[in-house]
Length: 604
Image (tube, rainbow, N blue to C red; front, top):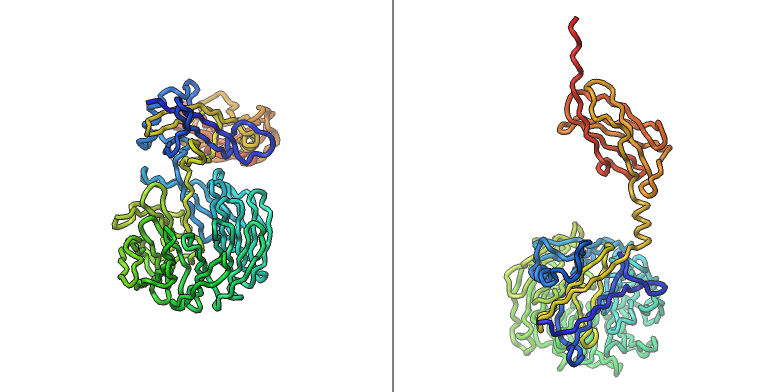
């Protein structure tokens, strides 16, 4: 059925200067507008897919359009797209100053390392822009926040924000990045993401956690040394109140359902419920010393709190602001994350992750059911320390999660209902402290308008294949990607010198000197290259293990000569290296030579 109108727009993003065509290496916005051709009404709530593949010189975008789409849908290993606009990528925040970016090819039985992002300093927390185009990473030792472009996977900026930035929170519209500063000055930095300008707000002695309340209109900052929460007006960027807690706060969480902030004091073992709009304490809940970072379950009614010191997980009902259930959990529960159906409990002294069914909790006094699965070979606590960012996150498009185990240097893929992970991938010998998903699938940004960002690494003509299952629609478009002048100049600068044999004879005599001459020229303009002192010529027997190398001497304009004696008859080959001209032996054209026996001496 071809009853849907589909329009495609592709435009480079973050391009300085006037508008221009798409070039290799650009981050590009792909926008599909889908409409009913009869009425012109946009088709909302659809789930389209799209792919890019390079066209041959004799091929048009519409040739074999439907067949290409079928191959991509089937996941044909021998017909993978150049760019998949439906993919997601897994990021690991590593213990060193890097981020790993991996394409999890679970359907193909492996993974692909897309990038290793060098941060320059170890990261601690991160926040992803709502459109997925940028990732912000706090760098405590550098006093900065790194800005990573998620299409090119490069650090595009390092924003100086103040001493020891740790916790990050991004406003729902992505306009402001809130940064908790744990240095002596205390307070928060606020980065305007449009131009990366920075404002500072003093709140009190740290360390600081932070959360955004009331749809981002208020920021709530904990002041550990001061024993207070600061309420900050996000529009005016001004502190409006300090709320005394009576205990040093260590971690915060906000329930949008209850419109309440829950502040935990690890030292005192208390949980304080605060109304940020009314600027007042609602309740103080006694737990036990050692209580960890709170997490609000989907829906906002229940707050889960791990306590590795007392080996418990507490559940607070925000409707009554008290602990309604506690589960005995051994091995030091230290982090809790959620899917739609389960609470996942990571434990410091075990590699086994516990799961608590959300539909079976929340009733006061009822036992807490627990199931589990192994997420590796070694306990989590044997690796790098826990980060503020999550080490367990949902995987897109499935009831599944990704679990980072730093001790194993591995990320595990677990589908709910299974007894063990169904997939895993090594983190390239680095310890993943946290994990994040960047979803590249097409998202509906406005009625009938579906968008995503992607990078196209090579110039050429591409087919953009579009597929919609209901109503079934297949379309193919042609996309031209121009050569980047900067990349082309770099390729020209890095192109190795050209080398060609300057001798005609291809036969030599064993035991007699053999003169070999080669002409070296500029790969871009063909001019001969003189004055080179590192032309190295190798003669080697093939097959066999004999070889000899000689430094060439210049005997003409761009011509270099060596003299080598082949020891015995056989087949030989030559290769040339010139490191100053970026030419290595394996890049050199090879010349075949036949070495024949020396003629027998006449009898006396």
